[in-house]
Image 1 (cartoon, rainbow over the protein chains, first blue to last red):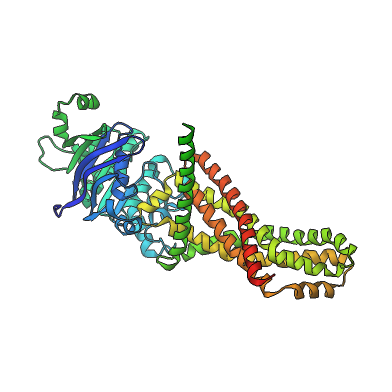
Image 2 (tube, each protein chain N blue to C red; image 1 turned 180 degrees about the vertical axis):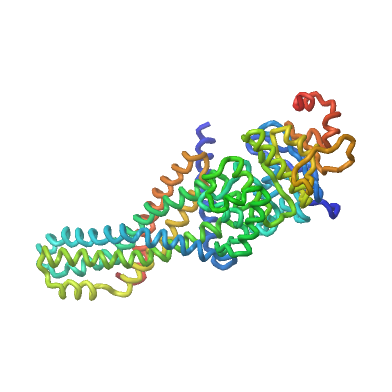
Length: 266
Length: 259
């Protein structure tokens, strides 16, 4: 039986396509926690997110999200559950024929396609969160890569979901833009205490998340002071050869003596 | 090795038929559940119906005209030139109106659906839709199926009418037939079975066009090249299916109505 704070749990989950990709992996995510998934390309990090959403079914094992067993549910049953989860795709996956406003409001205007004053206000609020409120009238093709990711974040958070899944939100972006995106992820973590899974290739992003918090008074991300006991609720999971080879906090990762992890960190 | 290759190909084809059947079935069962996307359906109806109107009118008119022109010499040999109206009416209403309109709309819209949905598939927009709790078969497929079925029905009627007008133009201006005679023979030739056949076929063809276009779009893979492939396959499959289905439908309805 899961603890009431458990948002998501993988139990002995395996999946193979032509070859095994994930082999009996298990981990959990609690309310307010951010779990950073690390690993080389092709180790199945994105697959973990798609499995959590039920977009792909595992070959074996159990996946429980918000108390419901995703791995045993039919596609039609999953739609209601997915509305409580936000996902930021690797390439943003914005609807290119809709404006930024229509993209962000998508869940709210799904049936009617009509943007009321109330919905417009909510869209602006979500866009203000990612500091792009001036772009609501533009099309995704008119935005830079970094701006598109930020719009994707606004689209994911507009309904204040219980869980957020980020798939390489900083992939292919310059360091300054990457930092802006990570600041948004940290803001979401510390302001709204949303549980999230974040896939990244950039170790720097992972450590920034573990060593910074969002200061509401200053309205920006600031580093933890030396000796601070503040819990940033961020843990790391490293995937390799279809398995989880490490799960723990940043200090535990830095103390780890596994030769592969040492090389990965260097 | 060749046997396993053969069995893989067969499995792939069977799986494709299964996936198509499931998608086509879902597009129909979605009609009985919520949410219903009226705005999307109307937008598609405008795109498919109004957008296809000029080309359907043009092709319908000249088909009727050429039909009258081609058959006039044969009819004249038997001294039955006065039956031109009857021939054009029966050919247009029973066969050429629905089939030609179906093939035209398939070329124009089946390809459009496959490329639009295919692009959405390869850029993860379909996955994004699913991830946001929106059923793509309800949001994308069902509105296109409804819009195509309804619009093809009316487009076929328009095609029949302008085809008759085209036939009339030739009969009156070139063959010197009496207008009253043309329209009377055309009208009197049509029985309930003919009209039923002419109006029933577009419903089936509309369903084929939209479901095939959406199926190829939703199963596109392999980037822009894959989208191009899906578009071509959609047009070819929809057109072939229309012609083959037309034969069996004609046979069935001729049997039922004894025409």
